[in-house]
Length: 260
Ligand SMILES: O=C(O)CCC(=O)C(=O)O
Image (cartoon, rainbow, N blue to C red; front, side, top):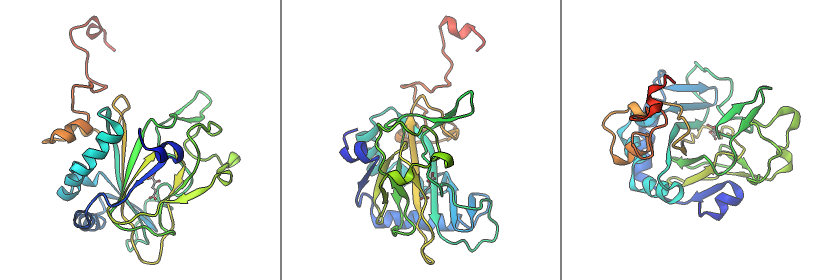
């Protein structure tokens, strides 16, 4: 990781990486999908679409565009695979059905994988382990932008996925808004506490949250089953044999004789 700000603040902002035209094409597809009830999770002021790239060739092209492939290579090397892909907007929904009361991520939380101890305590992986790209298809405002805490990676006082209600340390840290313009890409260290913004008038704020994890961490979805992937996709979907997929059976060794 050679970005100072990613190391120090947990966030790096790369301005104007993608063209407005690419963003506009992807946005058109998201807006079309957002009225299809099978694809979306909605709250009264948010819409989330999981894995939109599977339903839009524009978004799939964006995912393996040279711009994204270069960022991937520069920041992650070649050991990271796709864990999750969520498109989300904070904007009042005209659709009456809402599965959620509030947007996903409306309170301080972080997205690095969590585990539960025997005492049922949530514990997250340390910083600089998993990351997400946040791509702005629309500009964000100080009201509807994602907000994050300037908490250094060395701070071990909170280990959980959510800011604990009985130990809310959020006031001890400065917070920043992730103000983004169309085509900007932010890289977020998943150990950074963040939360979604609030609606700003009638404007939408579509962002893509694309998370990457080291190859030995299980993704949320079975991307390895996606057909006709190009070379970059094969890599990030975990189709490659080098590094091996975590679930690949070990052949030609005594271990393959064991029924594990
Ligand atoms: O939409 C946002 O601004 C934040 C979303 C978020 O925090 C999440 O998906 O984990």
